[in-house]
Length: 245
Image 1 (cartoon, rainbow, N blue to C red):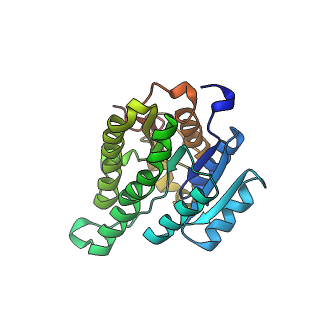
Image 2: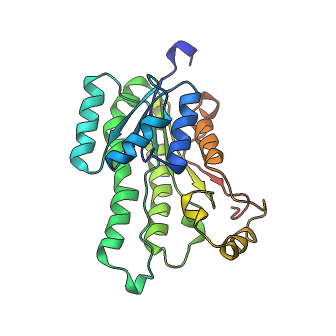
């Protein structure tokens, strides 16, 4: 694909902070026009402060209706992206025997069903262009398991299965579908851990340190590039050796 033919629009969900914000900023640096989504007005404002004026836009998306509205807006403005990064996700940790139905359903709806909502309407322009990149954010725990996170782990394992199946369905049209599985990444959440908890975590990581949001953004940057044209249906682990497979 020549420079003039390269797609220029990338959509990143959950782009208001942490890994999502780092991905949005990296893709902007790579030359793409970035559309970032958040589930709140404050999150959307955060996105607008991280993207350069004229190089991106932010939109609030929090349910089926808002997704439909988003797609209608992008179609009307002829800004349908050929790059989709499904980063948005939540946790609702609890032991399974104590887990409430909404703690299970919220995770599956946000982490898994959202892939269906976002991928389906954007497949048509990708199929028409005979080019596209879809990257889904999984997690190291999707393969390792983690006590107190049966809902979250199930959702991340489902993401990897979804990735492989969709890659088979649409690979013939020049569209790749991959996932990135972060390990322990330095974020607002890990910053709240005690020194003892952090030390225990680091003992399990051969690299000896937490990963950065930029490490994940770099992996996504590779997978959406032309250099990764022959990489599809795979999960790229970025975990410092925490889990090897």
